[in-house]
Image 1 (tube, helix red, strand yellow):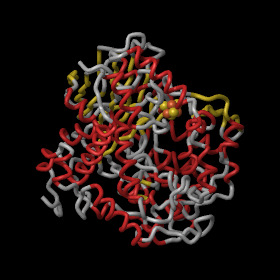
Image 2 (image 1 turned 60 degrees about the vertical axis):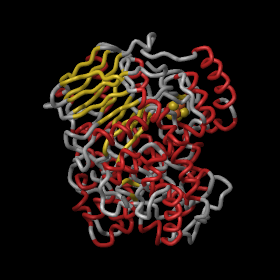
Image 3 (image 1 turned 90 degrees about the horizontal axis):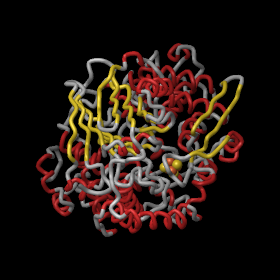
Image 4 (image 1 turned 180 degrees about the vertical axis):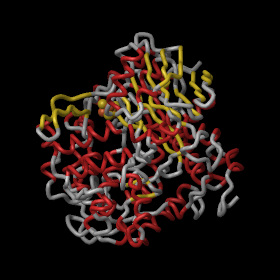
Length: 618
Ligand code: SF4
């Protein structure tokens, strides 16, 4: 038994209706820590190559980490792992809230789900007992009603629920797994995988006064945690999170010209003062927090409006404002709150959906879509009603919503011709809210992210446009992106929240006190590198290579027309230079395939024989 872990995984085969409890292997813990690391190892080992992500063979796994539910700050996280139906790549997607903590306190470090239930079902975990129950009565229910109904059904008002909405049931590729109403495992379509398994929800009841794990050195942990909270969490580097949270980035991004505006046509939004943190404060009723998180970055907002009604929301975050606000030309904070609330209830990823709507609006304004195509919707930038209606159509796969439910890349293919030139995605995943034409390292970060365009593997803009590095030069960006990717692979394995200011040294201290295991900062860096190479290997096995590490046409060929980065695009030459350097520093060949030497160095040598792709140099 290893302290810090429940030392058990739950295995549920929905086809056979079988439930098993598995012991967590110590070797897995030592080499992969938890969360993303566990998922990377198990997905690679358990999933045959080239399976249909929406077929019954795909695995849907949820993991926590050694610090989950311990009271360490920003650790109220869980992570979902699967093969993405959106990209066909490895997918990890993490979320805050309470649900993950309940899973661990009930006695499970993770849940591995396979198969497909004969009818809509939910899993009920009640500490030691686990059942698969009928959920047919919840068909078509939104996330909020599903959670309310299940909490009543199980007779535990403190039960926590992870659920899908109509989008997940309809296999929409933008579908999220939601928990505690407004927390989302959003990116890459994990909700569609859950829907394909006919699994509506996972409900957990836990005796929180008796969590099923131990802390190796409780007194030492208490003391270290208290000092860390005092020095770091309450310190100046976390002030932004404690006060306004991520919405503070809206104004900062606009100032440096990277705020996506009207489907990334501009990087500056003329109505920024209507969607920034100052505006948010007018609607904020209180601050909120995930389970025992002392940062408490959440903004609880409320509107009472003739048009949108009375809405209370935990949000919106920067990404939602950037993609569902400026990117759709919507300078109306009440409408953004209403849209965020609607999308959470439908169970979708606000980043991808904001991109899809922005893209459809540009297509409409260019005359590539007509009112006939849209079912009468006037899809113009800034039309809040159209944004709402289109979101519902996508979740229900109604009319044009059926093709848009596949995402920007597929919709561009459906439109044909030059429509791909304004599709903003990599590997089929739509861009987050930072335009690389104002921070060139972001182009490399998006292109080499293991789950498609993502800002949570590496966020070089912190040191470029928001820091001291030149944002337009490729020099030094490969090393920076690699360093951040490896670090974040460890962060998502612990599983920490993105917003915590922590380093390898402090992580190693926490690990020692909670688990009793000793890691040096260098050991942790190696764990991160191992995980990132393993997820790359997963993608290589699926057929991904250099050809898939691309940047969108607009980012490469359309200089940004306004703002501080006016005239700048990420030229293909500069981008390829960064990519070459990145592969070289990574120890990968020119196709982006990890070399044997690197894999052996990372103790992944045995995985080489499982890779068979054209161009792999073995
Ligand atoms: S920092 Fe914010 S999002 Fe992260 S765990 Fe804490 S409250 Fe949740």
